[in-house]
Image (cartoon, rainbow, N blue to C red):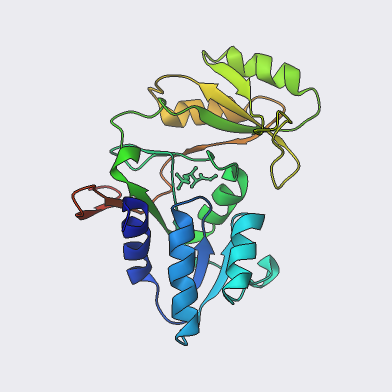
Length: 225
Ligand SMILES: O=C(CO)[C@H](O)[C@H](O)COP(=O)(O)O
């Protein structure tokens, strides 16, 4: 079993009968969705919301009931991946292009549990290029503003060379900072730019991280510990 699967399946231990679950996006979160699908097959009563079109499609294939947003009060538990996790459980997310929906779901969740291999754990955020979702209108100007914050911004493209468009019809700009000294301040500065919809810094949102190591051990880190 690879470390993504190890972490993701461990996190599903926290899923209980009757819960509303937030389904994350990405290659690690997929393992959690598949495991949750098995629980549903076994008769556990779970309802879910998804953080991307892709995750919703997989959930439906696995017969996981997807709730309309209007019918959801609080989400009990969201299980999602991350691109970087720092010692305070601040995160960079959005490598898979779903940061906005992931953040909306995270902020509606009693618990956000991050699942990650040890390679995602860092001392300081920023080595991974920070994804920023921007509206398409005058995105060239928004990119100039992003550069003024000290990063090298790169408009995300697909392998075929076309610009990557998010599930929300926006663009993603990957901002190469190398290091982000103050994630909370950077989060505010980025979202203050007109044209920015949101950015991939998740500050103070994660309640726990399940980290799997190549040795096969699993560590559960809790926020504030
Ligand atoms: O934030 C995300 C998608 O927007 C993903 O959770 C993040 O990119 C990690 O992906 P993976 O598990 O494939 O490494």
